[in-house]
Image 1 (cartoon, rainbow, N blue to C red):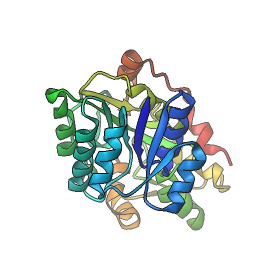
Image 2 (image 1 turned 90 degrees about the vertical axis):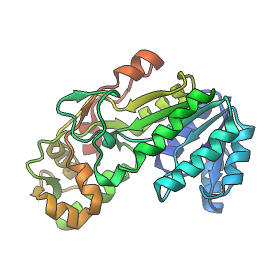
Image 3 (image 1 turned 120 degrees about the vertical axis):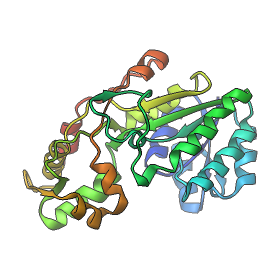
Image 4 (image 1 turned 180 degrees about the vertical axis):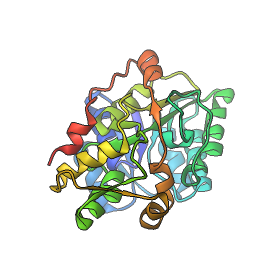
Length: 285
């Protein structure tokens, strides 16, 4: 299958291009500049020069494709919807896979799945109208699918590295918010990439949370990260107010207590996460 992908030079994108090609698909990837083009080319994708604001480029690339995977993060909800609309118009009856996130469910009060009510913190509140508009395309003969990744780890770790590892190494202790008993719904980057591949065969209008079903506490994650950072066991509790000062609005998302199950993706797509020991991975130096 010929797949057009946005965000190919990013953390999720690089893993997803590799997975798509490994499964026999051919990939065109949006590239904002020469550096991004070199990155996706090295992975085996054909670069398509442009950004998310280049709607004609997105539409034309989607028209050439048999499926679209939208991974890139737009600056605003409106920009994301405009990009999605351009690609949905282009792909027509082909599969369009849109990226959301599990944070939109807020605190889950135990184990939850895709049927949980939305209660997003402000940092991701913009996602709901975008995802609703995307999914409505199923009523018009389209094949929209939404993948909602949990908090990612593995490889570059991105958010965990940016907000926990790097500042924690500098301060001499990895932070956690409050008592750290809140749970994080984690997923390994390689497992998530496989979910995007599997989602190409999903039924129109489907939504899947991308989690491994292993939900360690934030304090346990901090302890694991402290080992990988070379400051074994050195962690510190900070208040939510302190976290907001250090991290900004994303602190409210890190403070969420989430436990989520991958049962729907396992049952409908045959997706079974291979990485189920995140603390060991996060503790590696």
